Image (cartoon, rainbow, N blue to C red; front, top):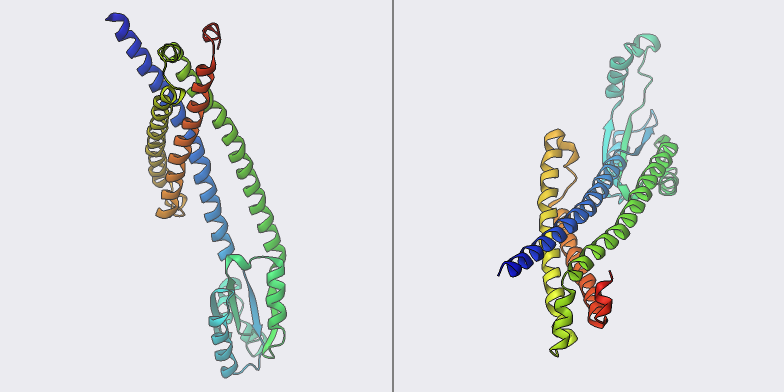
Length: 291
């Protein structure tokens, strides 16, 4: 009776250790996934603030300005646009420099302009060059100020961050596969003599294998739920530190990550149990004493 109780306690401890180990690995995968989402959110926010200035000729008419305003509204690349009149430009200059240009020149020398912000998918030198070329034929435009160097620098930084995160994610995935596989193998190893006994009484391999696969898949699901709870705790901790850190997490995106963690936990544990149990189903009695 005592021996049976010890066996049950040992099996429970083995399953508990396995579940906790898998949960910690899934937690790391989830953290990397959310870091990727956060990086994409910051990237999109940065790109949404990229654009160009269209400086109008001093003799541009009100009709031409209205026509251009309508053109921006229908342009597929425009995220938002701001019109700055001559008076607005003068007021802004005086506020920033303290100089009164009207007293210096006798007239307002500044021109009206449009500040045009482009959509993230158009934030590249090639796209901006095409936009610049399409606008160059408009007669009321005096100058187009494209910030291509800043765009190229921003895209390089974003690409570098994406490569680093992807490399970490791939490395972590390989490590997690190895760790989860070893954890599940140890769980099956602790029951290897039961497998051998079942073989002796004529049990089929599928019948022997099924409970190990199902129980480990369940452990994987439980581990993923534990990882999700820990990730929610991390989310609220980040939110208390700075709300901007969690603004990029859309409910559907978070749900997709959680669903992915559950699938990863179930599949990896299931496959690891399948191959580990196969090993001991094929093993001879003498091989059971080897790890």
